Image 1 (cartoon, rainbow, N blue to C red):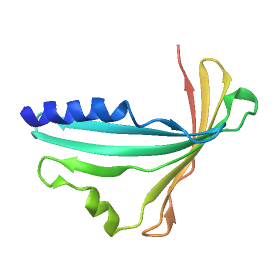
Image 2: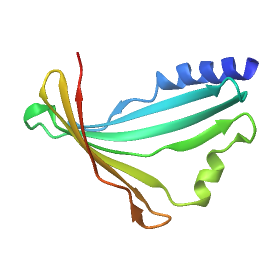
Image 3: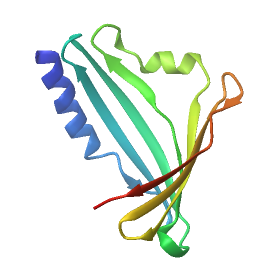
Image 4: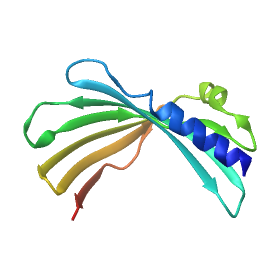
Length: 128
């Protein structure tokens, strides 16, 4: 239980200092996500940096490039150094909001280790 609280405290502290505007239309948005599986008694922490480019076009259209890195877990401890042993997987996306409550997103991922692209997804999300 102490591990979970330590991980959550780190997440809250780190998430408050991770966003940065790089240029007028470009920003770095980073999430640190802590997940605790209660039944398995495991806790893991990942860091998800994402570059977001605001195109300035209609419908609040944005282009994103991000990845997910394993940071820490309670069995292997610090894992970020393992991320340097393989090539990254990058997530690419473009999203638009033609209506305030409708988001359209086109996304895919590319694994540089295996030189493969994942399926291209078109997602429509209606929020009410």
